[in-house]
Length: 78
Image (cartoon, rainbow, N blue to C red; front, side):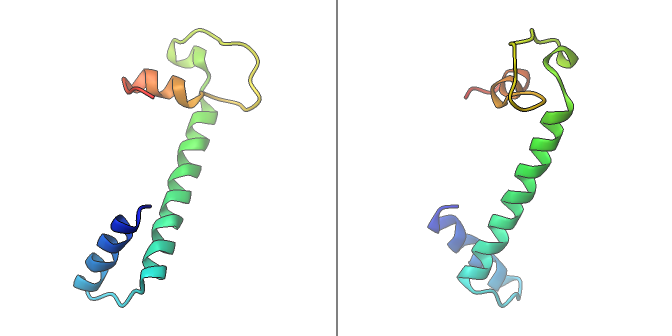
C-alpha cells in the first residue's frame, strides 16, 4: 500500500468515528491483503488448466492455475 492510500484509509476511518492511528490503519490494510492473497491462492489451487479449457503446460511446482492463466481467462494482461 502506498503512503497516500494509507493516509486516505486513515482519514476515512477518522471520519467514520474510528480512532485508528496510521500504523493501525496500515496494519488493517495489510491484513486484508493477506486474506485476499490466501483466498485467491486457494481458489487457483483447486483448478487445473484442463478444467478451464487451457492446454496443459507441463510439470508444476505448485498445484492449480498459474497467475498468467487466470489473467488469460479473465481477459486481463499481465
